[in-house]
Length: 302
Image (tube, rainbow, N blue to C red; front, side, top):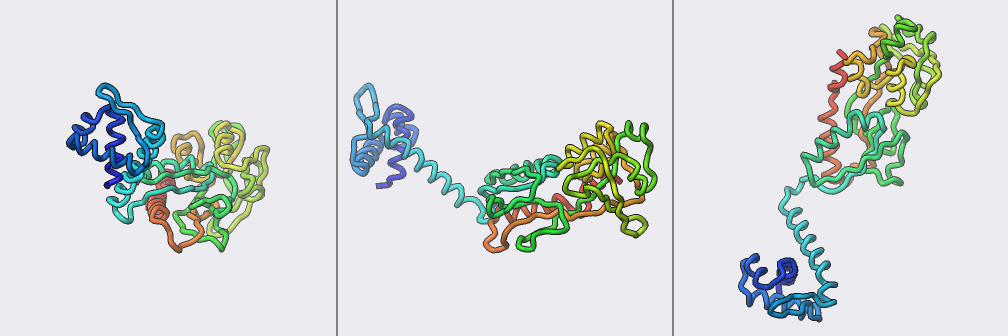
């Protein structure tokens, strides 16, 4: 007996309410439909339907069997879809960890484009402003902005992360515009709790310069600092991937054009190259292509 077809016949009879309707829908003869039902009942070992000329009803065994048949048919359909797809077509789930600022500013749009291209992939984004343990927290891929990564992990450099020193026009009207990096010591600087909290690093005329800074607002993620800067609270050093739009619109003013803030690598970090799933490999390739050496957000500041 073709048990899968017998299940399909059984489910169709229930859904359409009669054997004749099911026979027409499946393009089978009425005797063939009856034979499938009888063989399925013999295999299950119980009567599945009470049949009369006017009404069809399920027995207790039929009620128990119906959802299992539906599940088996769905699994068979999934199997056919998987086999028909190209062998290297990405599918499955990916858990990605990323900082709140980069996630909201850039990665969400990238992931949205990726899943449109590969609808068989489901992505779970973990927006976290801390370094996660990829193994313990079952993270497939982490996006990290750093020049100092865990040597036990595999890292693929995606792009460069540059920063811009900026402030709102209102702040500059009230407190003046710094002309040299040393002038920052006289301003209220909005600092990141984990990156450059009390020292901002620059390259000026080929020389490395570290400037001590202080201010009355500090935060553990860049979105908060940008909002504070937009409100006129002080001068901030913000990642260009986040601040470029506000600078272009004139909501923030780029300062100190002759000083280059320290650059960091934008990395995709994962645990192993061995047996890498096609989904992870395709995501890495996609992100590397999207976030190039000269990313779009930096070109907006030129």
